[in-house]
Length: 66
Image (cartoon, rainbow, N blue to C red; front, side, top):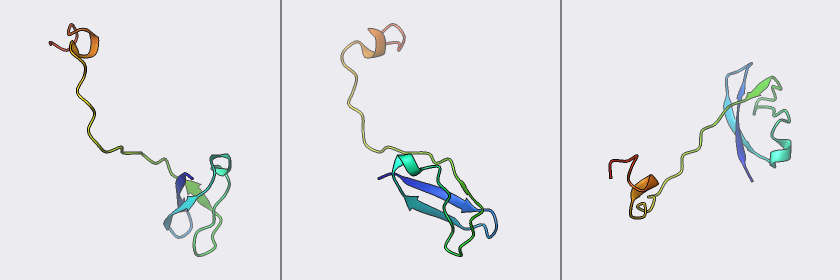
């Protein structure tokens, strides 16, 4: 289930909620019970190593200098 990050406009608390994508726009109260919150735009970082490109590079070697 996706996690969404929110910030309370009243007290400044930043918090996360797990919820289905269909409910991503629903309001979320902070831990102090304030309802004036905004959903933050989160970035996703994917770790790991990508496999090396096949012989010839990205387009046969013409655009990559290979």
